[in-house]
Image (cartoon, rainbow, N blue to C red; front, side, top):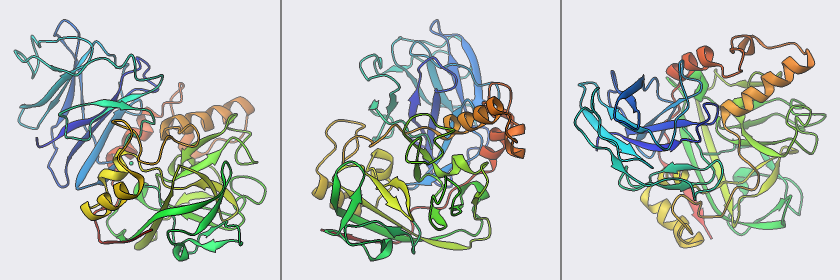
Length: 387
């Protein structure tokens, strides 16, 4: 299959719903679209894929969500057809309903039915890790996604802060929930940034940008790296409960920006037995959560090593090292909360936020950014160490 629907959330809520499509890196997706079908088989609407939002495991990833102009609620009773640039239906799927298309690009085709999500838990999505052959519940939906630190980041340990590049399997790190925990696996790699769109470049969080003295010095992380908010003095005026948010969702705030001048970077990540809240440069952040998208982004040797250490995922769609340590907000959800806070409190609104529409979905602004965005190729050479 040249491309496939890799993840979909159909909570019948346009703010939370999304469709993620994956295609082999470099595939020309000009003219590709996803057509939405009603239960009775009539064409409802269709959306172009837009621009690549990330590249991982040799695949370009596209996301259609509430940031896409005209996006509407999805639903378990609808069908979804992935259509290539020639008008050929690459994939036609449904979940709770048997759907035979009567018009549009899938006319005459019957969708492959995968079953409903009613037992998957509130807010879950359906995700495939076998190119659309099967779908299973994903309890931490992650449209478009590896969380990394730059060299020189100081990680709190029982013996004081240590540079992340010096950490190795077996070393202890301090965690908020489980006291000192050993690192089980580390991985690092060089990533060129020339030609990479700004949205996909590293994020710098200046000292004090999250709260008083938080971080204690500038912190550089990958765009999808999750930052703890809603507690411990970290943006707790904006976020009213503890959660993780992607670093790139915070770039409208003072002191947080994409590093557009960087030409290359080394990324380092490490995993513990569980997903942990850890301290990096004095602020709370995360260890690596080995979810399906991350595991699929590893090369075969790395993937086998991780599975040897952590064991296979306990269920389809689950992470090798358990569930997320806190709720994980999407980029759109975090940005909408920031915009809502500014509007509620009469605070100055950044230029980017002024472009968001009245329901804070940022449709016009984020759609343009999404079309321009392209993350670095994560298939470059990596070095790794295992316990």
